[in-house]
Image 1 (tube, rainbow, N blue to C red):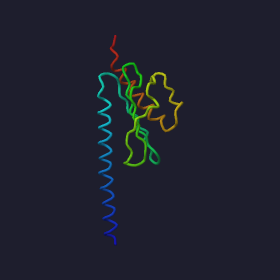
Image 2: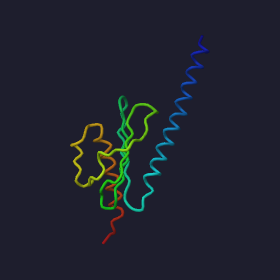
Image 3: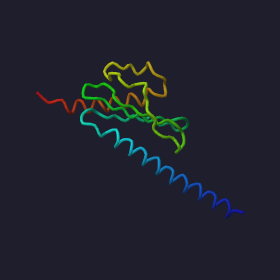
Image 4: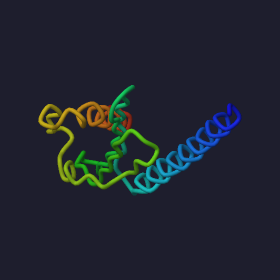
Length: 127
């Protein structure tokens, strides 16, 4: 009796391990695909919740700070995948008011924009 429960537990644990590995591969592939631009900046924002739906937002801007590509992954399972996010495309990161968007986007969007700001500061030549 206990042997069956242990076998099921081990099988489910291994399945979770392999599905997590597959999701991580998808994440790295998406980052690599989106970072293959001649110029611009890439920012990743993560809103990880202990219980509930988490969100990962990848934002790519051109050198002027206009969002040219955006992908979002939202979910609670290893089956979540990145989807194109047209909501932010074409917006200037300097003009975005984070509070104008739903709560599920606010934290990850803020983090992604902050990372882009850091990159912009690093590339501005010192006078």
